[in-house]
Image (tube, rainbow, N blue to C red; front, top):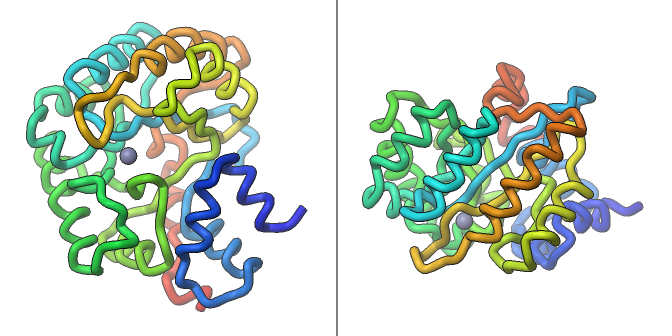
Length: 254
Ligand SMILES: [Zn+2]
């Protein structure tokens, strides 16, 4: 299987296509694949049946509390990639996320496509949210997911220089498209394997979103995944110390 089609499988949508066409890295597709594998976290390569649930675009006043309740009920932690502009409106919800033992992570300040911003603008997007997250619990967030999962070599450079590790994920059931609760459950079950990172959404770029399917799918899928022997962990737990030694040097591949 070619590197390109392997990467297409990661997304099973048009997303990777846009990623590849936007990458400014002047190299063959094989080297591009190496770059992506080395610098971006897709999943953990492990035989341990650990998986990480991740939620993007919160905090949201309706859906984040609903999701927290489900996680709490099942004693399952997750990692929340929060948007800075929402954080300023709902710091209490964000604090609650962390207090319940979940991990908080950076999803930039205004959720703009980073590819279209200058280095300085990207830095500001990351730093503003970093400061807000740090204020919540005094812990430095380590992971960043670029809005829409899109990045380029230049974007990765800026993210890494800002002290972050870029995380995407390998299980994306496309919950914002609202395919129906059953389809979401089916997609998650079909794709989750040891070391998987599952991408879901508790909020949206704007507040007017409907994440009820995500909430309902979650209620069903958590016990089913547990039954299959999966243990839920935060991203920091999943990668433990190894993530730091795993952060590659920016010039290594050039
Ligand atoms: Zn997002």
